[in-house]
Amino acid sequence: MVRLGHLLLLCAVLLFCAVARAGDWTIVNYGGRDHVTMRNVADFYGLEDYRRTSNVLTLGSPGRSLRGTVGSNELYINGLKFILSYPISEVDGEPIVSRMDLTKVIEPVLRPSRIRNAAMIDSVVLDPGHGGYDNGATSLWGYEKTYTLDVAWRAKALLEAQGLKVYMTRTTDEFIPLEERVQFANMHPTALFIAIHFNSGGDASGIETYTLAPRGVPSMAADGPMLSDLRANPGNVCDAENMALACATHASLVSHSRLYDRGIKRARFVVIRDITIPGVLIEGGFLSNPEDGRLIATEQYRQEEAQCIAIAVRNYRNAVNAVAPMPAIDKPTVAMRENADVRNPPPIPDAPSPIAQAPPPIAPPAPAIPGAPFSRMASSPAPPPAINAPPPVTRPLDPIAEAPPLVTPAPSAAPPDVTVTGSSLAAAATPPRVQLQPATAAAPTPAPKAAPAPPQAPAANQAQNERLSSSFVTPIVD
View 1 (cartoon, rainbow, N blue to C red):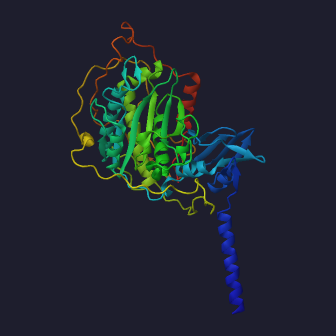
View 2 (cartoon, helix red, strand yellow):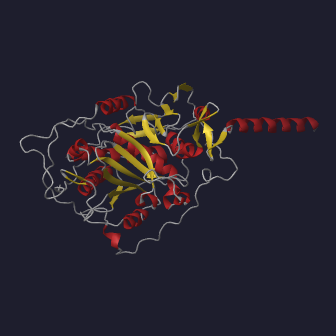
View 3 (cartoon, rainbow, N blue to C red):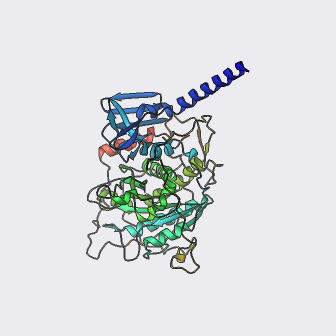
């Protein structure tokens, strides 16, 4: 009996040691927030190639890479830019990252199939921004409200070709209050929500994607921290899914565009704050920038953006839901192979922390009453009338001839657990064209005797995107 007791005690000690090693995270309190060391991150996710050159950190393994700079809140995961909630810091010579960014950015991007209680997605709610008297941003060739509706119609056709149900918050040029858009989205609990917008702001250029800021994190669209940042919002119940969808969407947009990657950012816009399903808001370029504006005015660019949305939805489903590849045109598929790694997600200390604690669940709004104002948002309304084509753009764009994974795999470093097959999404029926209206009666128009000069991306941006298109590997892997 004594020997048996000793054996049981030895087994208990060994088991305790094994658990301690699995959960051996170094928690550093810095600036009033919990952080973990970047070496912990590298060890946990198997990023064996850990290097530091001056203040630049690189963590890598076949198919995965992280790159950041001490003092900066920009983190590149497989070449895709993420704007962290807090900068990478340094304590006693050891780089650290906030536990908020570890659990809300790095974990759902690198291991999306481990997101708990993610709904099985069978539909998409498309939200074309603005409408009616709300024109949105303006370019020489038209209004934001017109372009967003056109992209939504095109994406609808492509998504329906994949077998998904698609709903649109507006189908004509009408104004829909933000609260009604939220109510409509929440009527579809197994849907993804994608708000389509175009940007404005001087000569700025590029693509950016917004997802809801987690509880306790300042909005990047606000002037500094606010007391309301500490309040849980309905959309926070989907923090992990929101980030996975933002990653899938932004990677698809950036890898098929010559525009600058402005990153995945956090905000509390009403339509992503108050929905209870995974959602993102995309800004597909700056109408205030002459080069961006000329591209957005072309049907080819808007068709490509619609294709990127369809690709992103497919990749999200295949990564997060881990289901059999969803049907698409010519049946392109992305198959996830089961991961042999059974380690648990990063452990959370017992001490209460707004970072560690998930916000309390918030009950979804009551079902809509038939005949309510937003019931006019039908899934299959009559298409808008066809009209004049936008001004020509001479710069050729690379067509999306293949339905790729989340991003284009590197030829020599494809992730071992992702297999891509299939062909074109571009064969879908062409969606209806939408009226492109002049911005104002007095707005200047392009010179009638010659087509606008081919918009050329700045040399640095073009070089960056060419590098990305050749080196991207799928950020959503498991």
